[in-house]
Image (cartoon, rainbow, N blue to C red):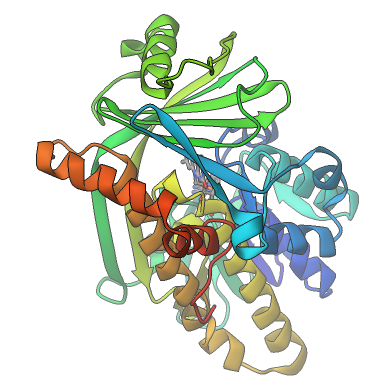
Length: 389
Ligand SMILES: Cc1cc2nc3c(=O)[nH]c(=O)nc-3n(C[C@H](O)[C@H](O)[C@H](O)COP(=O)(O)OP(=O)(O)OC[C@H]3O[C@@H](n4cnc5c(N)ncnc54)[C@H](O)[C@@H]3O)c2cc1C
């Protein structure tokens, strides 16, 4: 099999890249390890920044997003038993849209297949060869794909990054001493907006995926197994952490339909290109989900990559491909800093003493009490400012 761009991974990065390339008349084949049903039901991110929404809409996959996406003008920070709203719209004129990552994936798969695009499900890539030459190949379970360019969109655990020769990549990494237990529950959200809660017992997040589905997270020990968290324990812990002092808010509960534990990590490799291999999305960088940036960064990478590949295929101009890493990294590092900052402000670290907790509460009081500090959060959360990318 032969194509122009061989794409490994049918997550948001790989699918959107294939879709954007098709808009430029460039052929691609997407190889995906899992089956279609699995990738269409994998519950992950759900907060889209405005530039992400704009790109999906402009590229023709925004119809269901516009109908079902929930536009939010702010979030709540809850600590010390009281809620404080950060009003993005008032502070920076920006909004976010809540729309599940699996819905974005469904829309992109439908668009690619309707346009005659090729997505090979259950076709796990096993090796990438020849990236230092002009005819790279991807070996996958079931065959070989020859291409001009390989896009490694296969997430953190993929194989594309490993094709880069030892020593050619610099790795920047931080592991956090906690994980997120995430659940999806069949119950209407208990709040119109997301609630980020810092509590003595650890972080909690109230989010949603639709008017009928609530998404909730708890900071847990990274070594915890899902079995250690039966439903009753989860609801009790969520109720304790999210409780308000004046008692005029209650958390609705319902059947839990998805449950998983995600470790927290910050990770970046530089550069994001080696020869004819380009890394995009989680294959190149991971952020802790506290800043809701992961999927948005993946979308931004492939936006830049699709434009650069179009210049190269159509005009032979290699400049934008050479500039790919630099064009992405400004935004990546701004998001890294913001995600680390949110994570540090809201979670309990094992080494934290009573002094550190009081510093945390003082910071939260400042972020919610000062217009200047709140504006910093409101600039970063719905979009990313102060970057080159
Ligand atoms: C469990 C979990 C929960 C998350 N929750 C949130 C959240 O709440 N908020 C947030 O903002 N972000 C969250 N994220 C991050 C966000 O989902 C990612 O940033 C986003 O999925 C990145 O998209 P991607 O396309 O780069 O990678 P992925 O979505 O990981 O897609 C990679 C694809 O490649 C496939 N693949 C892997 N290896 C191979 C191979 N060898 N051959 C072929 N295919 C392969 C995978 O099956 C997958 O379909 C979460 C991530 C995880 C893992």
